[in-house]
Image (cartoon, rainbow, N blue to C red; front, side):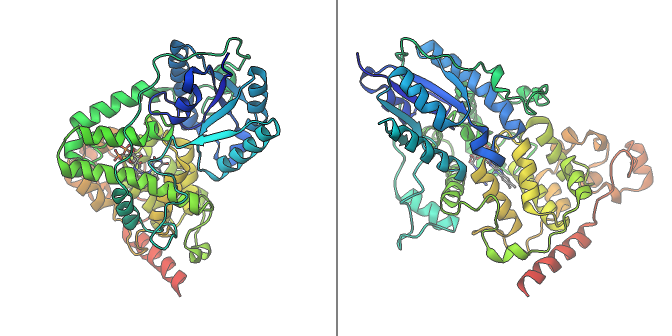
Length: 477
Ligand code: FAD
């Protein structure tokens, strides 16, 4: 009989367009699919609370799909370099296949697994399952990695279209006597291990798993792609794809998203703008691969001496959506309630934290890590560094978003704000984004008691802006 393969699922929890899966089953080989929860390897970057909620549901969906095709998923917990060689030995595997992972901890993990399997005379073959193009070996004319998005994106586009996605196999041959694994319950993937599911309400917004990813992709390309360039910045409109958590867990490949967008034949400007966002994701991974210190350390060295003023009270006001800036508070509450925040609001909220409040970007990134269902080490740390001005291709330091004008521009009718900050819902439009300017009788008529039912701004905009500019100027001195 043909010797079986071991297929190690990592951040690619799908069956279609999965080169590692196709390689594992080539020639009709039986396959043992396995997922290993290895929190010790990930350390500080183990999935945060919201991501654990997602992972649990996604593994359940993947398990159902695999079982239906004939090769049930084995769940394991522990060090991958211990678990995988033991499973390979138990089934007499001839090969081990997996997707490549790019986080510094995951690269080290791949290396350890590789060495442990080599001791048993086996190889680990890594495939590209999560990106359009591998970051290693992709560089500028001089061969150097890209540090700036625009030339990177140009080179990606010039390199040609990604290969067409490949379908999932209809049937899989499982191994005859698979070893026992853990139950999903035993993986303890609650947002706070051992405690009930605080994120249970997320299910109203999301359907984790490959079927949910495909449904969202189809809906987006049909309904919103054509207007993407005009609507993606409006948090009160369903104008962006909402694919980020599906992409983060690899329930859909970037190649599938790319080709679906092209095939939709929607308005060309909408499509091109959308594809450029997919390239921002690629760029973040490119940066993470070449600058593995990115999650902790500023990419611009001078930012190591930035005069941050850590303050637990300010950080908590921001985390709880009680800064007194309605658009920021709406975003932070959307995050808490749904595990996701609109991109424009992420930028405004992050800017307020690092500029007006002078809190280190790492503190904001850590909160996002724990509360976002799409928490992704590459995109999260690249984006925070971009907002803070410490990234390689960052917003200039003097660009301090005005949270009032941003709110008025991008949520002009207050649809987003009224949904997530209901205590301000009855205010007239003119004061919705700046309730502290409303006359007392207007506040009273709207049932708003500033400082009680809704906070006053934690710092006045002009004072916060001046303080941020002074701090940045000190850095340059
Ligand atoms: P769409 O607008 O539909 O874009 C399509 C896809 O492109 C997204 O799903 C995402 O995979 C990718 N993308 C879009 N914008 C960006 C971007 N700026 N950088 C990298 N990829 C992008 N995105 C994450 O996936 N995980 C994170 O942890 C994360 N943290 C962020 C933190 C901050 C402070 C900021 C400002 C942005 C962060 N982003 C992060 C990027 C962006 O906000 C989200 O990818 C986007 O809001 C997801 O919504 P969507 O799927 O509807 O995006």
